[in-house]
Amino acid sequence: MSSLTVLLQAQGGDYSFLIMMVAIFAIMYFFMIRPQNKKQKEIQKFRKGLEVGQSVITAGGIYGKIKEIEDNTVVVEIAPSVKIKIDKNSIYPDAQAQAGK
Image (cartoon, rainbow, N blue to C red; front, side, top):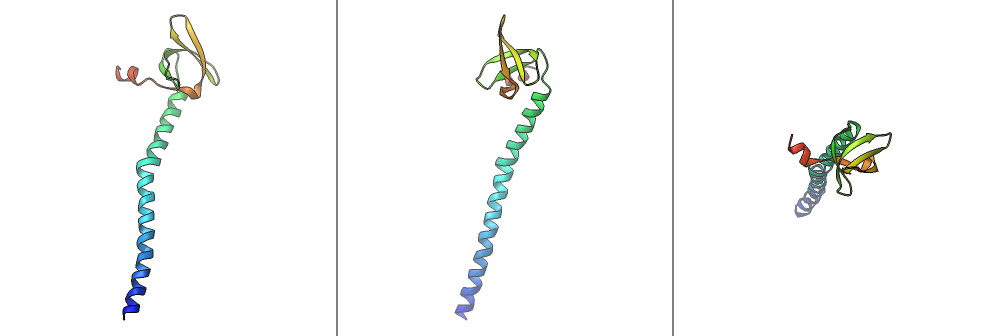
């Protein structure tokens, strides 16, 4: 009888380990992977909808306004008559400008 109990407990332990692994993966998906994918889609949508005159921030932390838009690059004015040309992939929405709207 005791060997039957040990055998049943061992089989139950395998299922509980599997259930725990599935639960951990589900938690990681809903709290880490899914929000990151959602944020990446929002940034990609922002980059496709860039407009001249829009306030942006570069990946290097430089704030400015878009003056020209080309295929893969953007000309950003960071001070009066100071313009820099940067890649579209290094542009992010300016949270301060959006908060003021």
